[in-house]
Length: 190
Image 1 (cartoon, rainbow, N blue to C red):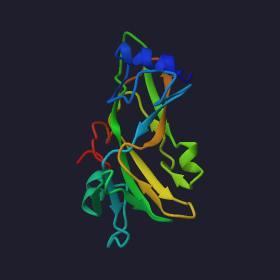
Image 2: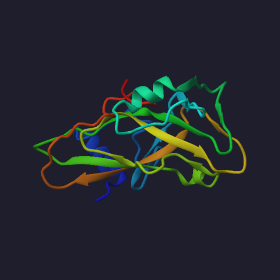
Image 3: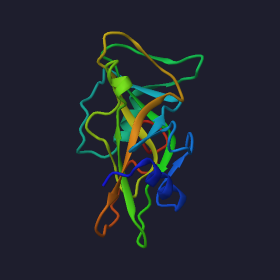
């Protein structure tokens, strides 16, 4: 079941999830929609090097380390946004840190990160095939962004870039390792 704006705030208030810093607490205003909360873009953009001398092999551990070593980092600001060129792929992360604790005495939650229709209409994709934020995850959310639009697009920190759809987890669960939990940078935990 997807949580409403009021239910998201109630879950935050009882410590069943956190979103920090939350851009507002009025469920009838931004950053809330009826069944989602909008998240903002952080200040770091990671541009994977297009001319990698090796093929990426995901059978080996260390995707975060690989991306960190084989990418360029840009820090963006209001005065210096990042120009996402047509056909270009970059990684970013949310300004907000989220936490979906594994709780035994109360309802647990997970979430999906989805794009915003206003960006999609400009041809901007903010995640590919990995929308799930698992119960037990904590950290910023990495965004896999690409510009499929007809013009360049400016990315600046603090812009509403995606929406978080929070869902109930039913049944008992057992925590599992997650290589990205605790991340604060687009490449993941380094």
